[in-house]
Image (tube, rainbow, N blue to C red; front, side):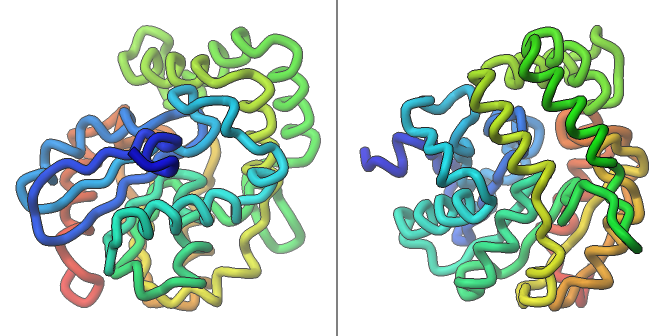
Length: 271
């Protein structure tokens, strides 16, 4: 087993001709795709991996300077595709991984036939003429709470992010993967993501993008999906789903999986 494969818990399932890569967001791991994978394995080779820093990865491999920017994660993605000797893939990126896929596609557009973004955002902070959903004060309080008592923060953040009470299976699942992260790594990853600003690179993306968004999402206001649509340099399409929360593939699979499968199977010109 190679170092890339081992470090990211890389798995390839299924036997189809085409390659599809599923990339998770903050506080989760590849298990977030458990409702989607069974629908893909008959038609695709399905690639699952864990972002460095996830609770399932070896914390000794987490390089704080490398992952101080989203480019570090994009380099990892390109290394994974190289390890797989991929010619091209459909890339499905949730949350931060939507932007990671976009960054990676700028340097190697040949490796991506399309990018499907779920709950993606180029910037979480509000700015002049831009609504990201957060003020700096909000983020400072979030980081302070994470640093003060990580377990308590997880318990409060999970239901807000998922959109449900603590009793729901999806909230319990997100709480588990969130709590599995080492607290100092979780704080560093959160700071990198929430302080990121990828607006300037959107015009450089040339690969078709399918933008999927919950109608209600604590982390990503609805207007962000339209901002992506208007500012990406590529052909793009937006679909707003009736799901609630930032992890709809986990919390509302009955709504989200059919939408995802449609966008995976059909290109923008035929969707």
